[in-house]
Image 1 (cartoon, helix red, strand yellow):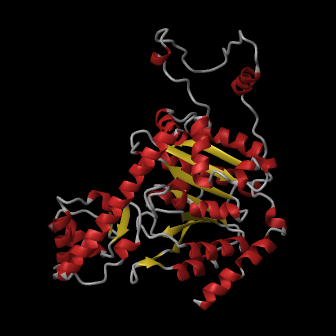
Image 2 (cartoon, helix red, strand yellow):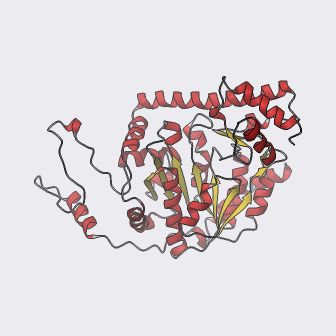
Image 3 (tube, rainbow, N blue to C red):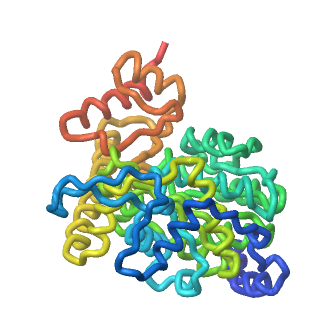
Length: 419
């Protein structure tokens, strides 16, 4: 405890010293502006033209008018970066309404095709322009993590994907000492993927004290943070609290990427509403980074769908809708916590071996039970209950109709010989 307090006490001094070093330059400082395509130049000129009879004939979209009623017309396609109002609201949700980075015009927001698209676009940007050239820096993921993450980075050409220790199976919580030890040994300028909240699949998030230690270490070793916000609002029931780590990193002057998803918190699973935030150190590199990002977008999906993004933007920009939606998010977060409490209490009543306090110390949609592979296999084959191989489960799938069966089956798997 004394060591942690000592490190925390020296944190701000270390940060202050760090800002005066040459590493204060953006890692994207050498990014070149992309050459604009002919239709992009035409569209830019068209948008700047104020003539009342202007006509754009350079676009590649099929133009059609269903009827004179504007409510029956298809919405105009978004720009490659997505719906402007959505980008504004999503960026503020991640960085806060009073973000200095937003005020200083050194933030790029991009609507993406879901959370996976946000991670992929961020990986592509790093692959091509991290430190001004093709990136060969290793990418570090937590162990365990969402199994798709490694594949996303590798698909972007970042083949060197490694892991740092995150979950302590014995204590059933975050092993921050091992995490810090691992990050202290990684090569400088490595890319570190960190869950800001709703860690998948454990549901165990870092505390604010942990973040202070981690960011100090990352800044001293020039490690680049790629933050994940897959279910903002569903951990604490509050957008601001769930995004606190992102805002904290930004407040320290750190350059970062942050992938967001609005599919969980808005129930828009068929719409794939994602967003990527890029916080830069200098506004002078924003234009070049933006142009290169647009080039990457055109190779990935050209333009994201606007339907789901329009819903999110409408809700977040309307005070009445926002208040109603926030109440729904709080209710869902509270329900997930209630399920955790009932799982814990039922397992205690059954006398199930082990301590189950960790269930209520975790947040979000997932929790890690602590079951091993053999016990998970027993549940699937004998009880027809399916968990992830690492023993993690989605608490939102538990309800009053299956709670007793699930807890009794867990008790059986932990108490009986499995042979």
